[in-house]
Image 1 (cartoon, one colour):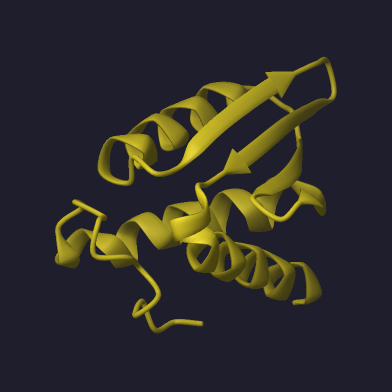
Image 2 (cartoon, rainbow, N blue to C red; image 1 turned 30 degrees about the horizontal axis):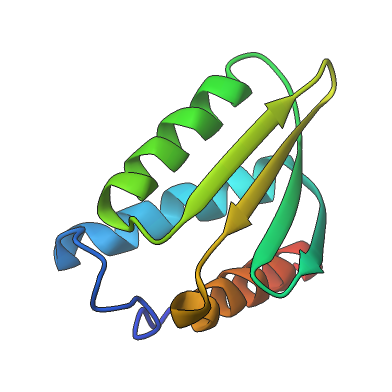
Length: 110
């Protein structure tokens, strides 16, 4: 899914910066993802392995993502070993969440 055509028009991140942001997400998920689930159609749950600086990295990335894609709602809950990251969207952006879930699941299989 290297094609970024699924990025919605409502995203305000400059086009030339989008591949860099996708690469940041890919790196975080490839390094830290322990599980992925879809508890509700409009919510994706990512569980990441915690570690030095990981929670701050997650909060920084989700904060920047919310700044350009305000349709995302990110909720991060950390404990000693794991960071639970819930990603929610409204019904109009279901396809974006589907694309994120597919990309994340494909990365798990690599």
